[in-house]
Structure formats: structure tokens, C-alpha cells
View (cartoon, each protein chain N blue to C red):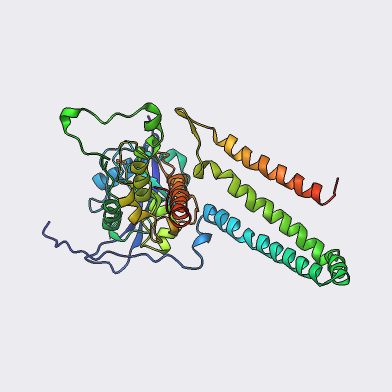
Length: 247
Length: 134
Ligand code: FES
């Protein structure tokens, strides 16, 4: 294992003293197989204990270390130093207000996430004594990819629609609604449609596709949103042209 | 220690008219969106043609003559190029919007995209046949 000096330019913001963020350059010795999160930890431990950022698992599971690395939304624990040349620019996730340094305010996402009811709403409530809600492998496969979301919010940082129109429910929340809507055990689609089949919901999406390109778990949120659009359109036609057909 | 914590979240504005210059993927998106203007323009041209046809033979022949002018030829080449680009970018993402699950597995995306290209080719051939090209 060999160490090398890396240059990191980190956006700093201290609400107590700063009126706006500014970049601070750090030269830090790191092992070559380290990730950007390791470099930040080394800075915090040996150079500047005031540097603030979120992380927990260090293995692309918890979704808390999302930040902009050279302008691209990335998980800091999945971004290898060896993949970058020159100065590495680290900024807080775009489109979210900065709380402090690399820590963003994520209340907006949390609220939106709650609004889409991201949990199973069984078609028929039944007592435990009646056994499990069964599901075939094919039924599971139908939505499995959407269960991989770790709520890291990289898709919100990539989505220009969310940046321009913060009311937009956004990729992860709508994908999660789609995940439950596609679940054979679920009966909550009508409730979720109230939130997602709206202008602020899926119709704000213009299919830039950036969400899917940056998703570290290959959830492909853009696919969920386009499918929601098609299903919502079919709903509309059924309701207006064939009111006798049940949804 | 002892330093008081305070909250003053800092909001970074997104530049309203220049955000798409920020990343190549945004530029690609804009290219897809902008090329549809040529499809719209060509549709208008077709409508003008139908209108001229309804006005009589002389008007229609004047319209056809105008189509042969260099400006018109350049416009047609541009419109064709941009329409192909627009169509291809949309066809290539159809597997996302229209996944087909058979049994447990999903059909490979290439099949869904390919079906779109095939449909496009068949329709284009039909149009060319009707136009008496062959
Ligand atoms: S620290 Fe958990 S995802 Fe990076």
C-alpha cells in the first residue's frame, strides 16, 4: 500500500460566521485505494476537525454520504481517489440548502417521501393467524429493482427539474410509490396516485434521465416515472372514455 | 466547544436559462428537445402543401417547384437529420417506459427498441410505396 498526497477543494459554509460558502483547499496524504470519504475522514482527523459531512456505513448502503464530486452527484464512499486527476472538488449535494459545509437540509425530501406512503397498504387486512401475503418470484421481480433505493438523494441533485421547480416530488419518491403500486400484495395505488399523478408529481418530469445515470444502486428512477406517466394516462382515458370500466 | 449552533441554511440558486450548460448530459437532453422544432416545422410545411392542393393545380405545382429550391432542399436535409436524431433518442429509451415481463424475466431492452425501429421501417416503406417511389 502506498500513500500519495491528494488535493481536495471543499466547499465550506459556517452559518455562524459566513454569509456565503467558499472553497477551502486541503493537501492530504491518502492511500491510493482509498475513497473520497476516507480522504475527508483523514482531513477531519489530522488537519481540520471543524469539517462537517454525513456518513455512516462506508459501503454504499446507508445513503448518507451523497455529495457533488467534480460537479457530479456521487456517494463519497464509492468514489475512488484513483479515478480522479488533479484537484478533487467536493461540494454539498446540489439543489438542497446547505446546513453546514457538506451537510445539506433534507427535510424537503423527507416530507415528499412520506407523502407517497412508501409502505405496504394491504388490499385486505388479515389477521396473522391467516398466514403470510404470498408472492411469486415473477411478481417480486416486477418491482424488485425499485426496492434497491437507499434514499441517497443523488437523483434529486442530478434532476434539473427539481433544481428549477423545487415543488416537484422528484425521482426517488415517485419511484418508491411505483415500487409499492407494482407490488401484488398492495392495494394503496389510488391513495398514492393522488400525490404522484399530478403536475407537481410525475408530470413535472420531462425525462432528462439524469436520475438514472447517477443512481449508485441502478434503480433507474427514470423508468419508474415514465411507467407512472403511461399508467396515469391510461387511467385518464378509462375514466373519461370508458367510465363503465373499473380501474 | 461552547460555540453556539445556529441555523441559517444557504440556498444556491439554479441559473434559470443556462443550467443546461453545466453537464454534457443536460446538453444532450436539450439537443433532443430542440430537434423537435424541426419536426414541428416540417409538419407545418406539409399542412401548407395540403392547403395549396385544395386551391387548385396551378397553386400546387408552384408549391412543388418551391420545394425544389436550394433553401428548401437544405431545410429538408436538416429536418430529416434532426428528426432521425429525435426519433432515435426516444426509441432508445423505450425499454424504460414499456418494459415487457414474460414469466419471470423481462424482455431485453434491445428487443423493445428494435421493435420500434422495425415498426418505423415498415411504416416508412408503406408511405414510400403509396408515394409510388418503387
Ligand atoms: S457512507 Fe453509507 S452510503 Fe456512503
